[in-house]
Image (cartoon, rainbow, N blue to C red; front, top):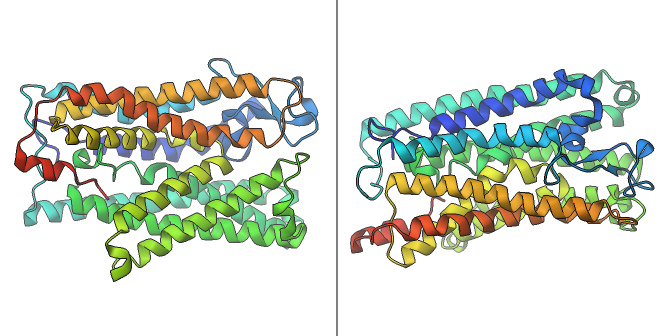
Length: 408
């Protein structure tokens, strides 16, 4: 549904999320005096309670490649709390604004206009967003690459330079994965102001860029591991070195993304087109779960996506009970879903802290909690927004079919 005088659009929320993503690494790097409180590749140490094992003062991680430290609240570090608040605020406040901006009546969400003028405006907006995104991608890649190549470790050999390129590619890849699913979800897509086709066009454009960055990151890492340790290192899953599982999970995520990309490429094939939407969502979910196990901060950065898809699942459930929400109610449900997702994250993250602070914790255990948190976010988001949607008025018979169509 395009923005109008009655209902503002959520396009501004997504743009503010893009801005936050663009400022994240420069601001984190500017805070280098905070050391490991904001440290690690992409801030993984500061975000996920992981520090140098040589300076470990807790039971966990003395013999491994990390040291787990307690959070300041509900298992979250101070850095994680600030980042999470900044990251979820644009979508939360945008949805809240839409829910109260024009709440007269319970008029169901109308199908988007399809006239030529709307399509041209949406196409121009998509082109602008893709251009901005391309500029951000250059920033996401160039900044970490610059400071990595200034380090003597990366300068020492071809393998070091290759590793720097592979790690730098992980930065734009991470932001692509974190932002890509938000506008195409049923809970956000109708309010993004681009129309259905414009939203799909944006998703496709950014999706192919995601595959490109993933190829650079995965291929670079594989070549580096092969040259320095041999690929057999990926499959050494003894509890003595958690990094082995880190690389293996990265390989699994890369293979899943490859399958996801191949399915998207052949989406018009007769054997695939019939099942494309279901298979596309399934493989996308598996990619994000594997990616979250590989890189724990996704448990935070994918929270808006988890909330959006939890709300979308609740919308489908409610439509089966003959309920169709108005725009204000649907946006209020999205607000509830975001708050529910935060609650789901906090439960898992506090449990993670309790377990990881105990004595003799295995080094494989940290990889379980991030994907578990992502699943908890989706489940909690769905459960929390169900009461909001179930109290919506009953839909007409003609509207029922349209409400069952998910943004694909």
